Image (tube, rainbow, N blue to C red; front, side, top):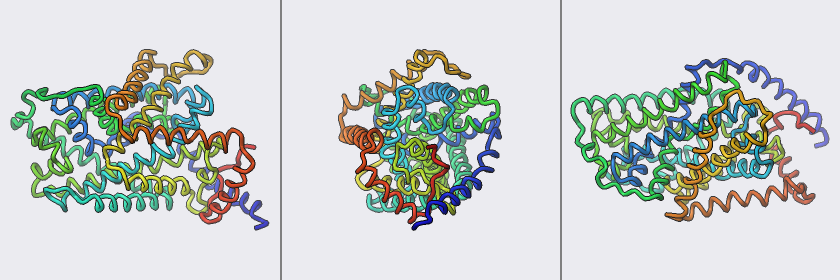
Length: 487
């Protein structure tokens, strides 16, 4: 026990040395095309295979449904441009955390990292794994709904598998990512091409009177947006690539302006493809939309669809796990999180504690939740912070005029996005109050309790509890701090 200090420092130095070549070789390797493909790869995920049904159930007609998909794409593009200004003005990693820190100070920033840790990341991980298991189960239960217990057990197994892969090896994680990204683009291409062929053959009857029967209320529109925007989630992750882009101030906005509309076009075309073979009612009754599409169009090779969708969703879940470690690591470094969560495995050089923690919380979410309620829960929290962050951009135009802004968006854009996010957060609560929003607010506010106990006042007894826990976990998992903590 006595020599843990020097030994830890040696291991620490070793882990720093073994990391160094990676960080230096990463820089400035990506051009514009790579930037666009990262954007398309990040955004297209399990959402487009799950959301069409929910968007349609909230709009109840083909026309408004397609309009919502287009509007979500526009919103994601505008949001991403605002984030591009923030990301080039404040060049620290960790997502919204440093932006909130600069704009409002530590409390909102802390609440963001807390909400990400407890609500946003684990619930998105849970949704993706549930989507995966629904698609895998669908072929085995043709024509009827798979039992919930089967879906949930399979989703839990997926979470376990992905957490394990990412805890064991960074390289394995990125190989898996490359294969699965290719798989998901293949399935998107198959669905779009077969849909266009069907359109050319004249299968347009489902588009006649496409606004008939639309029941649009404020609450329904905002819930449709929640589900549509879930499919675009990842538009705010593009700043992570600024460090690696060549000529980022030109290429980042360009990549966003080309990349996200490309995704939007794909999504609209996929929905159009679904409607060439299914009426609105049939789409709502389908257990897994893409599987139904495959059965009707690609038979006898229809097994391709669930297989590739499963690959795509696993890839998306792997991606969330992959980026998840970084945020906790930044918050832990600032002293805003339990230190051990930001530690790195000595042997594997992966942020194992963070990934294991996510896995546990995501598994807890799977037990009571279904996809719809989890998407609402996730979107509510996410848009609360997206709105705050973009409002921060407007605030900093006045309070931090001295900061350099290599990319500067017209002030109209952040104002518009802020107003839309206020609408998205308030409309569902007012029109269709549900338990998940209350839980979400409670979970986020409970972060304040931890903040004052462990971060702000640093009570002696709170430190006494957390220090031995950190030490034991460190020995159990063989993890060390990622770098010398700045004293």
